[in-house]
Image 1: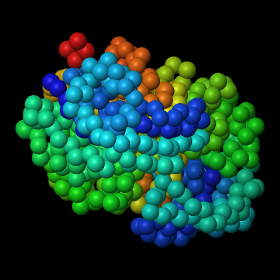
Image 2: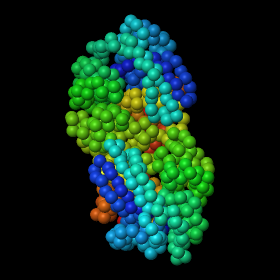
Image 3: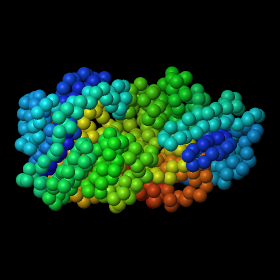
Image 4: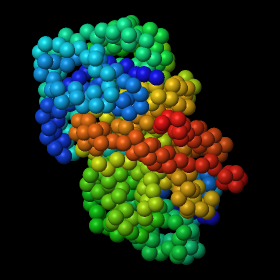
Length: 308
Length: 308
């Protein structure tokens, strides 16, 4: 099954304890589309400015990502400038230049409106709703967001969560959105608002999946080679939707596997800047790391004799 | 098999968003001993002052905890006064009165020196080493510590970790001790220093177990009823040693189960102040929650067809 991904396309300038890079490929939809492309035919929709380097387009096409519906807008591409210090769980923004992102009004070409698997990467929730309004009977819509939209468009997010199958947020975001530091409580409140399922990304602490049917806790890969965490959450979401599309199974058991696949892909992406690690990543490495995480998470039930 | 627990005994004054309590029963060894008593015959060694209320002693004895080797010292009992705000992951200390704790010099009675399972709850690492020196062929020594000792007695901790089977630390402590924000890297460095195994307690994010043989990630129970997190780590350690003693199996698979048992007991303890939840807790509730966590952690391998 095929995947449609809509979100931002960016040129990032990033400094971490492991390097300092300028105008490298980034953006929520780019990370997500590259991750998804490991699993399923993927279309990427997002805004590129007139200065968007051809080499990045060539790279995306080399991953068989359909770039025909990119929105080419006159002016400079969206730029994010940030850095990470000693504790790379925390991103610090130096500067955000929205540029042509302010003119982005996503139009889904007629031939793509029936794409069954859709990931709405981090973007203005009003635009995410506009995308949903154009879709024809999607099987699965997954949406991501960020603290900026929780601050500025809380009511729109309330509408959005009722129209998607899975909401993806990080731990800080769901705490902020549901106004409690307790993640399980925050998740229950979100479900009570009409959200069908929510995945909480916790970076180094793994991910949680909550739905009315139950709760799943996915461990993270014990990653020592963290060079640049940018795009980890987007990579997670893209891999999740890509894997669901490939297996074409949205049952709770398969969503659990998809969460782990998302964690695996994110754990690879943080090993290098931008999408550099994705350029050399092989499917067999993905599969091996999935199995490694499975072994890390495994424990057996208690023997009867231990409860005498 | 039986358990020996050595550590502090305290009267705590604690304020959380859910209440404000004065001079309630606490201390690292008390939380640990009560948790251990659910699984194995347990002896508690720690210092009590002349003001230690008889009712607390009665409660400990009601759990069949051997209190004959408590060190009764003239003067006021060790007191900790602290509070938790909105985010209860963070304890704030108002006041610490060491009182008779400064006179505590643990002597293990001859008849207890061959206790096979030993938990050295948080205490001055020099005293922890003194306890180890008195033991006769223990099967398993588990030790806990805290940031205060990492700051003030780093070299002593280096000696300690070589003499125990399992070191238990929380995420902040191991980051501080091994001087890296990356937990898997910190754990590897600790193992390289001669530590046989380390368990990293991450509170709401579960626990990790690292040894030369492998890595285990235990999820936490999705606890919404958090009223007072004091003693969660001590409860974890006590339940871990108690379960290991009950099953008398220190193999890597059983340590995994013991880590989950520790998480389960800690998740109960935080439901109320002091050890109040332990007073009503039933073994069948412990077992049911263990199975609940197992269901939360479960995911199956990838189908071959998903990797074509």
